[in-house]
Amino acid sequence: MSLTIGDVAPNFVAATTDGAIEFHDWIGDSWAVLFSHPKDFTPICTTELGFLAAIKPEFDRRGVKVMALSVDPVDRHAQWAADIEETQGTAPNYPMIGDADFVVSKAYGMLGADVSGDAADRTAADNQTVRGVFVIGPDKKIKLIMLYPMTTGRNFDEILRVIDSLQLTAKHKVATPANWQLGGDVVIAGSVGNDQARDIFGSWKEPKPYLRIVAQPA
Image (cartoon, rainbow, N blue to C red; front, side, top):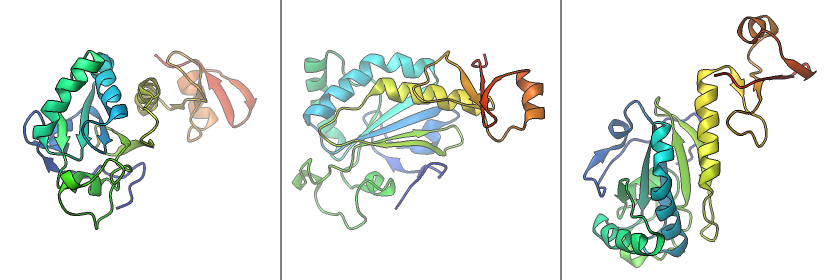
């Protein structure tokens, strides 16, 4: 299954470290991040899970729920969580899906439809494509997809930056330029004509007719 931005995030029922969940019900009216891992007890994922636990208040402050996934059963996650706390200083404080039947990984296009068998027989390299980040809006549509190799840890500052942009641009008729950070100037959306822009923004800087720059709306 090939997913892209704007698609409805596949719903699913899964076992997690917080009990069984239905994904869309769990999201509710919030934003959500689903980030996936090829196997428990893998080194880079260990650092990511611990780091995310430490900065989870940043996601909470933005009204974003976080859920992790690993292609292993839930009962192994508890053992891994202990290792994460020991080595990273913070144990996961968000639900972790046990995807030992590959249902979620397949639904999100991270594993092929023909994958089967016992998850315990598969190595992290077998599951190396299960390294995705999916940001999902309250409308249950996918807003961002990021795929990482196993050798590169994820940049959570960038994930938070994109969430800030997504939430801002969902509320206001603007877009954010390259390397934008919260509080920086933004660009009036191309879908907004000049007459409407004057009503909303008053005036703007215009290096080119298609590049109309304004201060970030409050």
